[in-house]
Image (cartoon, rainbow over all chains, first blue to last red; front, top):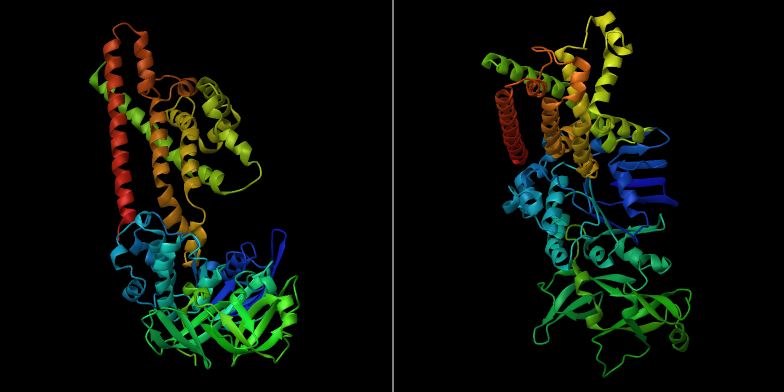
Length: 367
Length: 229
């Protein structure tokens, strides 16, 4: 458990960050330049906060009032940098064990296990310059893990990779979440990356933490406005794969008691999945439409209506206990006479559900 | 010229060049590192001062050394009164002159090689538990090593061939300060000296080739050692 409450100055921006993370993956989300990297650098001990306190598993790393500032090398905070920062004059194996032979970290973690987890078996004797971007990042993750960290910081580890390389490394990140047994603070400005595997979300905007908590709760809030993405804003729903329609290559996922049809998923029946539905992809109807191409007609209830912003208004819909977000025109809201508690049908095109954002649900302590 | 004489000249030259290297390289290492990595007031001035021996006529540098380090000079007097050390007209003085003339040539590749080491590697190493000294030992110095080696070769070569500052500061005394370069100069002044000049030139050439070949071997060994494991 990491708890952060710090203030710092970054150029002209004042950074104010107060949040705590759980035992899983916490995503630190915000636009470029919002101060995310400065926040993780403060956790790692590479940037000194002006004031505040950082604590991890009950150990104080920084406390301005008590004049405690543990140096980076003694913090046991693993750091995976955006540009991997492998030591160019050492082999992959030597890089991986750097924390042990140079940092005198007693490896509680098994070398072979980390190598297997990240698929590094064939890379051990290679010099870093011969690795692809994705391979480099896997080595950087392994190097951080083998230094026995109490928390793993990942600063946009996929940002410098192209689409194909990202797709190559994502399965490893999911394995990492399931098997590494170390809390992860994952910095990103890409919502689809985050919604795949984050448990908690910290939203950073202009140097300040606007909100933090379980990802579905935070993404379901409309008061955060554009901080959770203007075009990308959307909610996360958790469901279970219940049906496979092979003739049309569709997968049926049940969320609460409603059935969603998605483009074919490669997951066995009974698999819990998480899907992200963007607010702008949701339309509303008061009666169940027939003869319509849209596959997903979801029974819902208006839960919250935001303040109209120009021609648009943001809505939160209740689908059972879960929340769905919708963005409609202010005019539609008026014509349909939308108000809290009104039953509606949410219409979502199957093709609008971002396939990349569909990820497995945390398997350990959910449901 | 007798073969024993020639051998003495070679050994003296090697001794002077080696001493200059041992004296100058550590100072050049610290100076190069400071110029590459530290920010301090007067950095530009230091950088300019380092290069003075490069732009000044060597004779002028030698004369400056004579004024400073002569028995009655401000530094020379202190050295003599306190330690009984004299540099002027001694082989040690020749080593000092060679070290100073070689200094800018050693600082430059060292500075460039430290500048070429990605400064972002240090925080990365620190998060893995390495102290600053360990980072220097395991990351910065090994990565800068080719430049340091180049500086050593360049400095040694310059020290071997130094002429102007040496002859002005410590004169051309057989058996004490007459290095290969000075001996060639002397021999060109006497009749029938051509043969001996050619021999000395051939020997200088041989020494440089061996030194460069040796450094290549060292560079290869070091980079392989760094890769190992």
